Amino acid sequence: MKFTITRRGALVGAGSLAAVTALPTGILADAHSAHEILMLNKDPDNPENKMLFAPNILKVNAGDTVKFLASDKGHNSETIKGMVPDGAEGWKGKLNKEVEVKLDVPGFYGFQCKPHANMGMIGLIVVEGDGKMANLEDAKGVKHRGKAKDAWAALWEKADAEGLTS
Image (tube, rainbow, N blue to C red):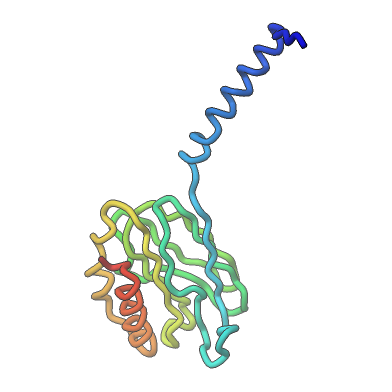
């Protein structure tokens, strides 16, 4: 059996090889993950837990996107003053609306549902990368009221146990 390569076949093969070779690099260079956080009236696994974000703690990489889903009515997501890294933008979602944020600055982002913050509806996003620890002490030092005070104490304990604060 004789196999002949034509000029057209060589060009198509070279073009295909170049495209396949470049593809993984291009995909990996721009690869960022998307994450979701639910805004809930009650925990589906434990109905005793009310007014919560699920998950209430999330570790992401710089450049990742987080979308807060309005799973139940009456909630929003917004950052807490003093709990956002320097140079990062906070967010303030509207009631009953999804919020999508891209997190480019490493550090600790505290967030809450404004109507239910005093009931303990709070959460933490840890963005990995150089400079992550820069706002840790400031974020931990923010004062909270109501059930949010105890909820934050428990959340920081959980973050410590998961190695997110070291």
